[in-house]
Image 1: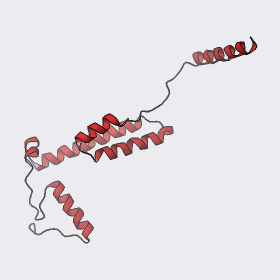
Image 2: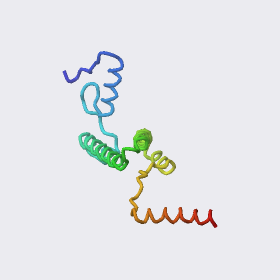
Image 3: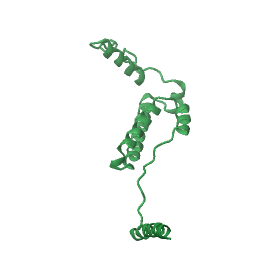
Image 4: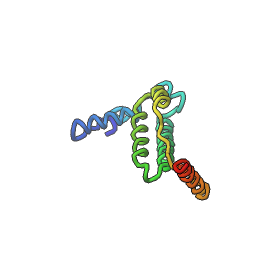
Length: 137
C-alpha cells in the first residue's frame, strides 16, 4: 500500500497533490525525499524543517496581526493596503523583498495625537482675534 502512488479524481487535484508532496518532501511512493544540503545543515530532518517553517509562518502572521491592530476602524483602506503589501512581498525572494521594503513606503497609522483642549481653544481664539484685528485695523 505504501509503495503505490496516490491518484486524485481530477488533474487539478493530482497536480495539487504532487505540489504538496514536492513541498513536503515525499516521493509519490510515500518515501521521504532527501533534504537539500543547506536544509540538512540548518535543520537536520524533514520534521525539523517543517516545524521551522510553521513557526516562521506563525511569527509572521502574529506580526501582521499586530500591525493591523495599530490602525483604527476609520483607516480600513490602509489596513487592506498593508495586507496586500504583505501578500505581494511574500511572493518574492528574500533579496527582492529587502529591496522592495526599502523602496515601497509602508503605510503608518495616522491617528492624531491628543491635544489639551484648553491649549486648542486658546490657539483658535488667538487666530480668530488676530484675523479680526487685521480686518478692523
